[in-house]
Image 1 (cartoon, rainbow, N blue to C red):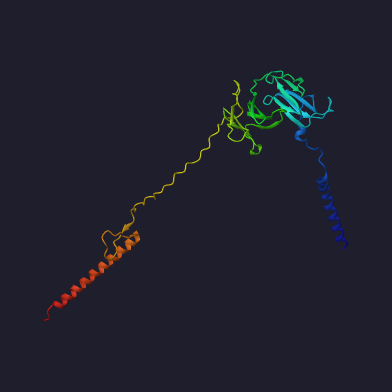
Image 2: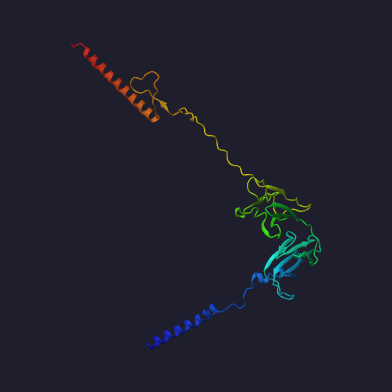
Length: 321
């Protein structure tokens, strides 16, 4: 009994020793935590930060991506040396060199040159220039803005770049943005209350259409500028195709003609007298075959009957000796 008890205790102790490393490994924290993608990709967003007012910082870059000005919200107490990789308000580059933020008009000028400049215009009209780091010159394939009055106290700014046509809708007066159209979102929703859309947004000749008044007011149309020489879009031209409805044949009052009977169907004269010109019923091939068989059988029986009758008569006529 004691031997068995000692053996059981030893077995339990050995099993516990084997489980301890496993349990420890399950609860142990990893030696090094993996770095997030955002933390390891800060080089893509670092640049020269300059305070432009209204609690905004412009992070100026000019590397392989081309000239960029990342407008970030840092607060009014920001000073050089403080962190600036915070909330992005907008970004200016060669495809979108103009925007507004917190009452400031922002424009990336000389974007195609080797020395682009960010120009910030305040509400009072004063402008300040911030040169970007020097880079390589490039062909400016952006066209615009081209202003267009569309009525109802609204204006539209038309742009064209390698990314396709774009329309920025602004309210007159304060220039507050109302909406934006581009190649992937070419139309305002019905809830907007006005019609504004890009027709043929992925085609070679896109057109901007609008209608801001009700009733019989006509739809306004203006074509986008053509691509500058030497510029090509980053997508393949695909023109919109008009929607066509399938034509429906007009109903006719005359019934369809009755098709003549095909081969394989035959008419059989019914038994009994038939009036001249009466229509004969149509029977199937099977019925015809059965009827023909019955008629042939009856004729054969009648023939045998007639032959038997003639034999009997002959026998009766033979004189008895």
